[in-house]
Image (cartoon, rainbow, N blue to C red; front, side, top):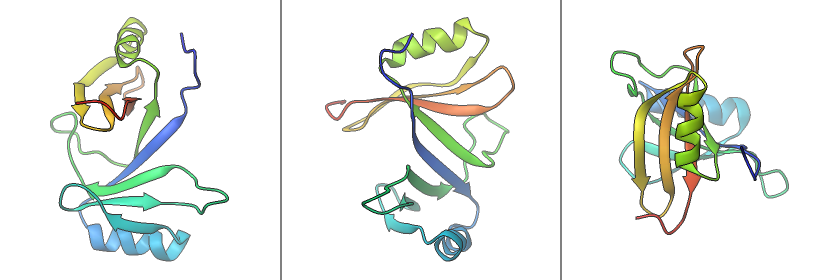
Amino acid sequence: MPDMPNNLAHFSINTDDLAATRSFYEKVFGWKFRPYGPPDFFQITTGDEASPGVMGALQKRREIVPGAKMLGFECTIAVQSIDATIAAVTARGGKIVMPKVVLAGVGRLIFFQDPGGNIAGAMEYDSSAE
């Protein structure tokens, strides 16, 4: 299916305590945080110029699937076509748990559940998305 690599492009840490979680990752791993976008949302820089790492976010805990709080790291995979990814996920036993949304200036995003029950995101990055 893919013409390009489907790399892990982004991760989010969902938490009920932003301050404690931010302090933990700053002190344990030296990650940098800066406010970005909506309130209580921080962009995480995990590396440096020589080894930038994967871009991340720290945000208030949420429920993508009603009744199931997001625990662990929430990962987003970069894909060439969100529509082709939706078709592939559903054809191979997965389920779309958050329909396609457009993030202006970023791209088109879905969240899916794999056959094992794991939830992840897929993003067709497109800076011209509206």
